[in-house]
Length: 288
Image 1 (cartoon, helix red, strand yellow):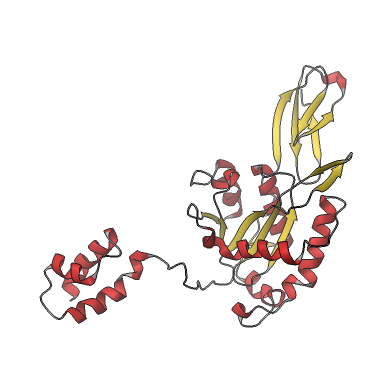
Image 2: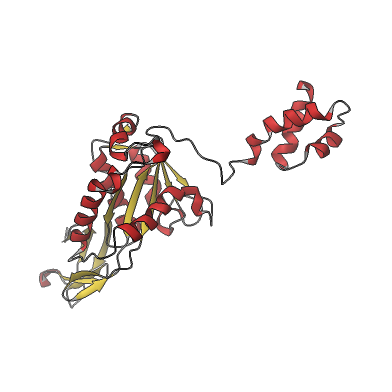
């Protein structure tokens, strides 16, 4: 049998679902078909991949799943304006610990700023960050330059889910539905900061303190220590996150950032100004 195994593997590599009876014909097998079937049964999972119904065993510090949740609620953003803003959600796969923050937009700079904030609160990073094909992260099937630079500075790696496969990161997807039904109803929010503050309290007091059967009838907050112990430490300096651009200041001395207009001193009309924005502040400077 060992002499035939390379041929079996070559066939399964190209045709993972090929029946054992067909394999027997292709390799010229003339002995007991039961023996061949037993060997194929052992080898086939290496090439067929994981069944979507299978349960994945996660190791401490190994993986975190990320997603954007869009609550069906218009948040006051000042000056009588309302906006539906995304919430960046992180779920640690081993401990099932969740954290989240409302961000200004789904642009890459804002997403990475939110990721850095959540990771900074943990004080560590998992060995793998799992995302779907969010356009600012990996919409074309490979990490964007911005996302690749971010994960490179953290010393971790980014894994993109296959297209149209929400179950690949089903843990965080199910959490989003859980938030819709268990956190959002009956609440009112005065601002994005108020939303994040209420969400943080609810996660700490309820979501992360519930007993979860899949982690041995334990609570995420109790398993978090074991998860953190196997994570990588964060770099000593923060990576480049947020939005940044350079524009020439027009005669009306206003610049637009995330749909809002900000005035600049008229003395720099006609000169280039550098605009940077994080989750809390917009800075405009003229370096000339």
